[in-house]
Length: 111
Image: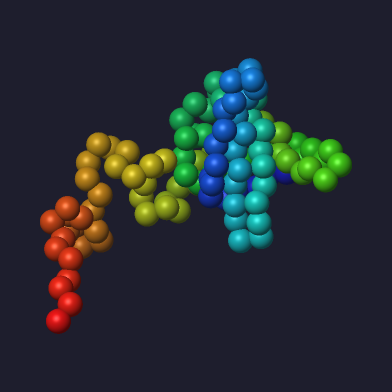
């Protein structure tokens, strides 16, 4: 059993994979491809949508390929600027740290 965590850099759900989701995560050491079967997606429907995840499962090695067959998923909270999956997830507009709306910021003029 292996437990790993990282930022989600890609999610794929090919039509030919019968509901299986492939998630690529990255940390400071590199990339890891994970395989998430439909039964796991059903058990953790909201967790797998986060931008950073903790995953536990069985490490598979087939030739040059290394991947994690996921059995459990947890969201890795407070990693990506407060977003939960994608910018504007709550339907609001993006905000700067000081509360300044991005749409109202005027570009600086060159002198």
